[in-house]
Length: 474
Image (cartoon, rainbow, N blue to C red; front, side, top):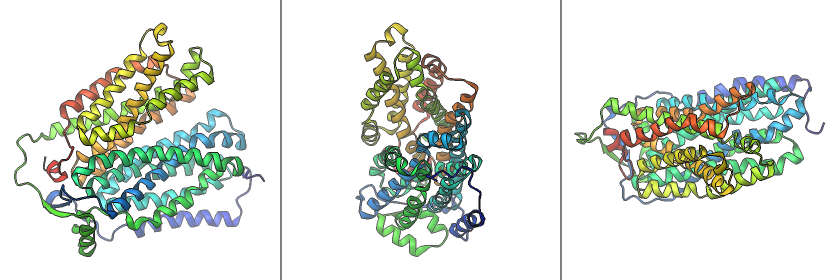
């Protein structure tokens, strides 16, 4: 049938397969959960952290490679949305407005997943949360065999839930097992390379598979890639204090040996500049506001930028060329962000990337006569792209470092979910014919972006090279 399954009836074997998935996924998740739900508050009194002088060893390298692979697989799934939409619309014979429901439900799922997996990571452990997310990720590969569009929407929502939680949980886990002097650059670099690698993998798979096997192959590839991640799960460690609280002493001793971890009691007295609880809530508000601003710039302004450029009189080819030139200037953003985050300041790197986005928004409000000059337009778009890429590269690592063990997963999930909210809002507004212009979007986002940068500068803490135990004591 040329890989076209639209209208094919669901026979007995396919019905049985669906039933087995519905039964098997909950059973697999139940089997992955620990028997005892341990308390992970600070009453334990002891954390495990590598001394600052600990070098990166082979187990650190293996963990970094596997978690980077996990991020690439995780990002690849939602990144394929743009490649499957044309083929899906053609096969099902549906209008563009109807097929636009697919990215809407996927982004909604990723937002829900960020909150859900962050909570699970705090309750049951980081490694367990990653395994559960991967199990659900594997099961949703069946989306590639759905004979009706409605079933694709259901499975795509579940796919979004599974994909939404991987990023914040991986940041949280890496923050807890890496030596303090390596933690900053590792967090930024792994997250950035995972994001870039995911989009490259999605586009590469579309280039190789879709012309031969159709759009469904892009969903089905989630099955073998997810199984590969499960096969490498032995290289994914658990947070050491979770092991200690559940009495898994043998695993804890093995992990201490592999990662150079040592017990680190909480300081008896907190530093004199300890922030109050109110100030910590204000930092949370600042990080959430920054994530929201980023989501609207990324999913709103930049998403609609090609249409806005064509409305200004540029052809589609010229508009794409302008965006390509601007993106080329932004290519080394992740490396620069990692360098400044690790060598200079985590807090001021984040403030600087938000400030660069703010400068791009200012530039977008220049007079049309000046903005129509191509070098100026490229510079403005480059500032927006560099600023947004840099912001998302450091925002979640900074969040993971700023919260104690018991709430680190939920806090990182909250900020990660907020960073997707703009995409949901834009997808909801799109069917109503709302398409923001460059100037209009810049005007609406100018003040919130400036306020978020100011709040981070005022309430943020410097985390570069500092022990998580010291930060947690605050």
